[in-house]
Image 1 (cartoon, rainbow, N blue to C red):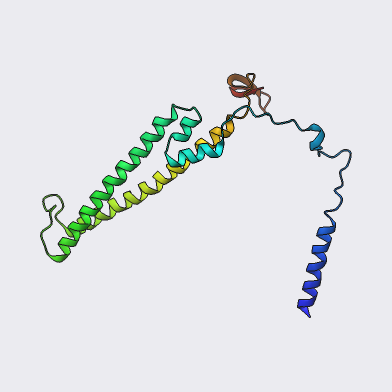
Image 2: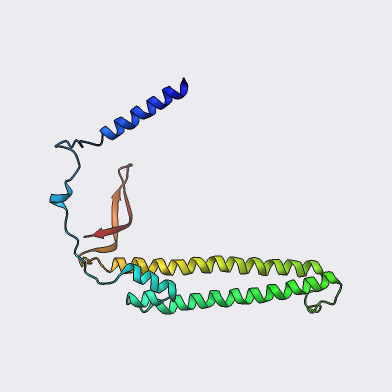
Length: 193
């Protein structure tokens, strides 16, 4: 019985929802604006393709920035990728060396790093630290890689818009009145357009 009542209420709500979609009601004093009459036409200024910029940047980091003619970003992206690659490789090599040394110590064979790390606990602790650093660098490096793809995509989109020369941001001194009938001296951030 409850199922039938629930199904009938649900179906009636769905039918009312569909019927409510037929006639939109706009009042004369409402804040809605008709898009057909008042909308400005978008004029494309650039011939850059954002998808192509993102694809180029995904294939070779920095290539999307070069496609967008932002040549100053290319060395930053390449230096970042090479830095992450170098430190991931370094931490991976040290991790594997310490792992192999700890395995040799467990087997009872001599540790090749006996002069540097004498105890087995220090060897295991060092191994775990370098593995954690390697994994963290892989995560941060991947985020940097994705960020440079997003940067190329967004920069290609932003090239399509005209810049207003009158738009300015400035910092000016100001005097403001306070609730205690006095005045306070300060700095105002002013946006002019």
